[in-house]
Amino acid sequence: MRRFIDFVVRFKNYITLCALVVMSFAFMSVGSLSQLGGFRAVIVGSIGWMQSVFAWIPNPVALKSENLALRELNL
Image (cartoon, rainbow, N blue to C red; front, side, top):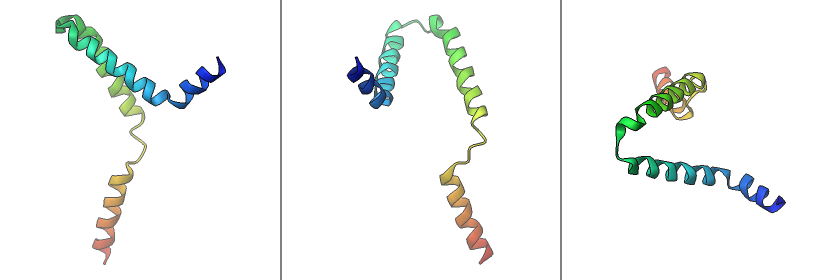
């Protein structure tokens, strides 16, 4: 049992990705989008809420490009 837990902990990102891909294929095969309307609204609302919670974390790529632009402006 310990080896299984170690395996799950080690590969949790890949396991999560596989589970989400399987769920995506299952939802696509349903065929009727009206059945997924409420579920989709909950998911989109949750993702929007999570983005607003983590919006304070700076984007390193944007910060780097902004720093370069400011350095050139100062020169």
